[in-house]
Image (cartoon, rainbow, N blue to C red; front, side):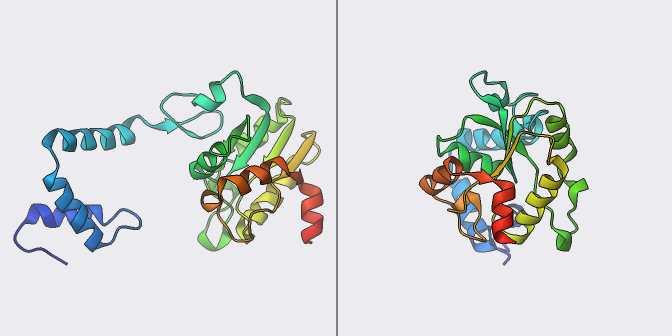
Length: 208
């Protein structure tokens, strides 16, 4: 869908439509909205996008997104550093934080093991997780990955590698439906799942 009378508008539509979930019609509406915006607002938008790309980094401890070398959660002295919740990505951190039921820290894998997509343990933040466990500073690992085949595969892989090296391995209770993503789970259900977490070994044996 080319406009034909403005190359700049056409170019903007092409670039905006590259964003996930944005089709060309939506990209057109967004481009026309930007045209109507005050120049100062457009400047703030472009500056924030540039800063997002240039200044946001990954926390060296948990791999969460951060503006500093160590994220606010890991550097917060009130968080329980012996409690580590393993999640897929930043969206799951946000979902769990919104429950206000968790006071530990996180470990963001950056995905889950998905052989069909060519994603193995080597493509994820696995080694740093195993190093955290082997340091002897972790008292409990909570496996909070998606209730999917790939999520369960990843859970089991982690369990096999840290079994006997950490006092307690748990998984969030299955109040979350099979196949559901954490980011789309309501806060009450997710919060209760955290509070009602069970040992991974017990949970896995029930599903086997």
